[in-house]
Length: 202
Image (tube, rainbow, N blue to C red; front, side, top):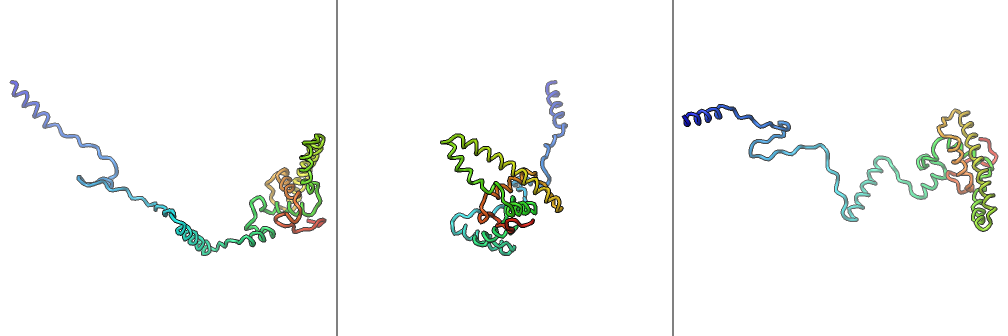
């Protein structure tokens, strides 16, 4: 009897089908048995190696300069850059100087005398105020007057720009501070150089 039970158990085990193991990944990523799995191809190209010596770096810079010339990008010399800044060339102007509204603000400042023209004289008074305290109060009062002038100037520039059909996105305070930051420089120090004279209509 015992032999019959063992034989029956062996027959039952043999009749149970083997469950195949789940296969993961795409069919193209699977490799035949006994071979390594192929690596997935990518379309990204590796970056060029960094130059290891000064000679290689100089050659790379020369190559980039040649590409810029081919693309029509001409690098200005220091002298050409200064002349372009003086004339107000849009290619070299900083972002804060660009736009017709900022050009109108520059003409407004250059065609008038403002209290802000004498702003630099307040700094010696501020230094002297450390030894003579009443001067500090006078200096602060003058600064407050200059702030009022800047806000007034900014509002006038906004009104003039809108009357000429220009799109104004800046507030009166922003335009006033821009005008004041130009007004306290001497005319020969201003960049771009003034294109109007004192008393001219703008």
